[in-house]
Length: 212
Image 1: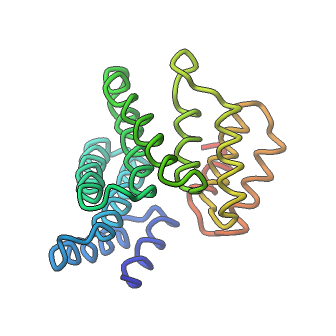
Image 2: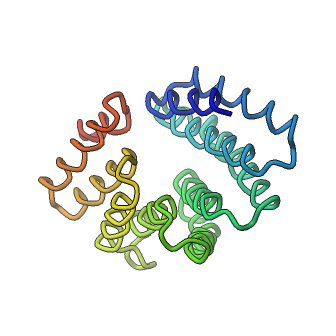
């Protein structure tokens, strides 16, 4: 699995379709060889999540939507095989959130409760899981205030997440996005500088730093 994870990491960092396509082929083959392995389905879902990001960045909404739908099915299948993975529940929460972002208000009404439910389950399984805490942060950040969104709670969740996993460059970017939303530009810049120190090639951090 190490080779697939290296491809996934390269694609995650560069938001590049090439390594992500290779990573998808790699993990798809693993799921075919070992269809009962929840971790292979989980990693395949992660690949398709980043494929959605890459497609969205180039303005291909159709491809982004297809990738997120595939990721949803894969994450759900992973949980059918192992319902006790906090990582998989938090990934599914993020995927429901992405589906809201691609689908608009009606999608929010449908998927919003699912985001909350999956994050709640993830924290029940592991209250100190950094990925679950980061997902909760995105939930608070992206939810409208009238439906429970809270930028201060988002910041607190991201901060706790990076305390538990100080190498999570993407979570530092999300922390910066939340701090910018609050109006704390200095704190946001510090978080982005740390993200880029951890992963200088991160396109996500670079674009956020540039204000994109």
